[in-house]
Length: 510
Image 1: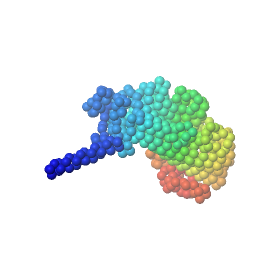
Image 2: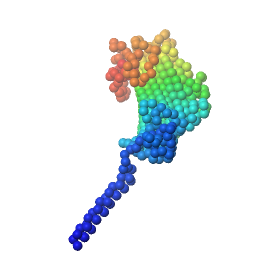
Image 3: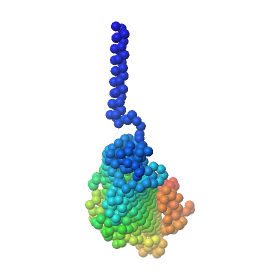
Image 4: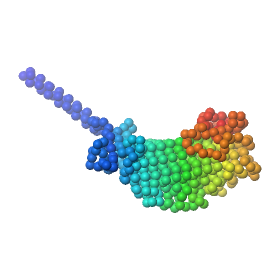
């Protein structure tokens, strides 16, 4: 009898152990756990979609069925150096975690090529924690039948796109729409139509796209969209309806030369209807516009911009202004924007800008274009003016302080309304026909090392760019006004060349 009872107790304990193990398994799978670790899948043009995706039995495409098998931490490798005539469509079936993203990349150092013809190169919707890396996307061309984006990210969260080469798409090479937590790093978007890189959100909603980083990217030779006949196209990097976007160490060049209209035009790197945008350590050079059209500039804060800054940037030989400060008629109020520690060289000589800095307001209301701070910049323009006020340029509380303006003939075109000019250095390359403007004016020869000959194209070398560095004995190093004391501005701690700031230094390079 005792042995029987003991056997019953042992059986009960075993059942309890089984129940505990079963409960652990249920918890694991309900929380997304898997008994096996992350998997690696392979795709080759010699593969088949009925294969299991292993190295020995690769898939041929990344079909919807294959995509549905991907779990957090999985990696898909396209065979490096091969060309795949496909269009990647990746939707909410793919979601990783912060610690274990899903990765889609090329195998080896040579990127795979996705040749998508007239379709998207890669359309990604409603995904999170996904990484796309080291792939070359090629469309048929903006004039050869393609009507899509290259890589289109929509309604996604916490993604990274890295080392992508994107070309041949009628719209944008890379478009990030209505998304957050997106990092674009080392993207070369070229030979597309509307833009190299576009960040966009919902209209009249500056927060729909937010927390986005564009870093180490190049937008080049994006000439224009042949189907856009009523607005600009051919932009380098463009941000609209977004909040908290960082653009740094990027270049934009030779964009906009084939926009199919003569109205408002493209710009190298710019933003509109956005808040808290920071553009820094970038170069915009030799950007263009259609013959007879407007813009074609280097940088631009356009309609509806608020609380944003362009700093430590170089603009040169753009057909439009180096820095546009614009407000279109239907835009929300434009205010509290800053341009500081930047350089403009020989900008604006082709388009109506005719100056390094161009100011325009389609509205007659000066309160719709207000509170702008332009300080410690260096302007060298051997072809035009320093500042141009369009005939329609109502504005209020614009400050120009501690800048160096070197021009050929006239410092300012047009009529200023409420500008505050203090501590600037005005130097003419030829006899001037206009008196100086503002308080504490100076007319010191800056003695630049090599002005008007800029050829630098690598943003990471800006710190060594010394063409506009002041000589050690220059009085301009200390002859400006103390902006922190005078206006209470927070100036930062470094100049254009990463040197310690002087509180009353003049120009970008102190």
